Length: 164
Image 1 (cartoon, rainbow, N blue to C red):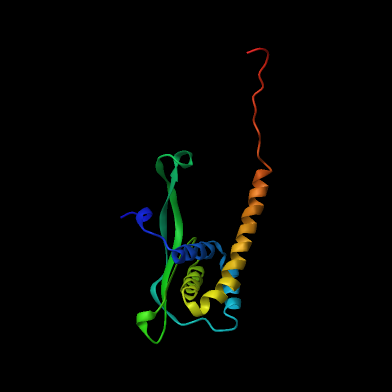
Image 2 (image 1 turned 180 degrees about the horizontal axis):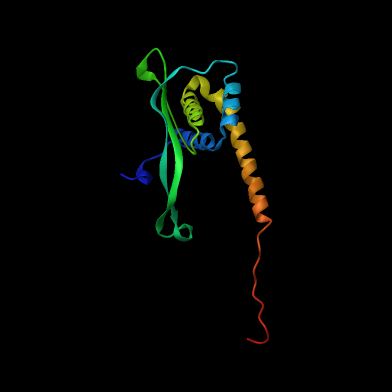
């Protein structure tokens, strides 16, 4: 069974979106936003299922963006998996994180945020105070980069001499 044949739900799409935001957010900003979003609560207790690990992942490209795939090179990635400690281990929430780079604390914070966002009692508040502002900042940053890049665009045209 391949990934395209697995039906996706709205919940999995929402989780995919917040994990993308967490993966692109720098550590200092993620830590500050997570502490502020928890509103003075201490960081919840958790246990590692997979402590932060740094390794390599193969980056693949496509000829012309849509053609045959080829191995472009390797990128350094850090991943982590944790489980929140609860009274009943059967309903413990698992959080995961994976991002480019070697920052283990960033992976810990992102996995913790992922686990908390899956809990109904934290989801609404954390989404509004953590994910939405970070997503808006990342979108503004992308738009500014797009505008800056667009200003360097060169239009080529061909002039025809005489009668053809």
